Image (cartoon, rainbow, N blue to C red; front, side, top):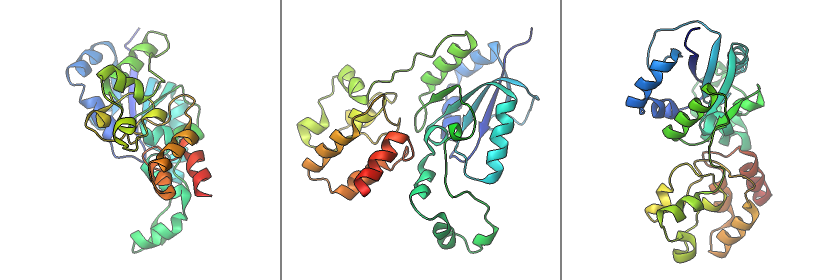
Length: 256
């Protein structure tokens, strides 16, 4: 029996999550001893035809061509894992979803009639069955290792669903929102970054998307008590994970 075959696919994205995978360096070489990296154009032009045991998909679906392509990827993949905010929540490009994309096109492109795009940028899960979503902008490379290990060994990935606040406590950080009145999305954001921003006296930007059962309404109330204008609270929820359901709903509620 041959090695399991892994494919890495890019859709509408900045490539940051694929670069996180390449940043594994020594670990990636060890992975290559146990699997066949059959399709990964960011790393090599060499291509091995499918089907594939695991497909890692970066990026959102933003064009009609991408709709058909993700369906083809799904058909040739035993497991399909989405990686990063674009693939799991539409990405920063999902800001188009709250406006008329045709207006953006007319401003940006001299010949917008040549642009073939969708009205919305959507997560991969809106189009095909996804076996696991790995959050982050970009992803945590060690979480990616855990996910690959889990799927290759037939077990559930051990990825935390608690908030960034837990990471702050584990690092011994004083809460920037309570102690200094700095607006922070940490209480509603899934852990994964190691509380980078609060560790440097900055509020969390929500890079890893909503945590399990986030109380976004309560956090919005606290932000406004700190003097943050309502429109700025909406803008905070419309960042890297703007179209994640919990963040999207809170932004819409506040924007009404």
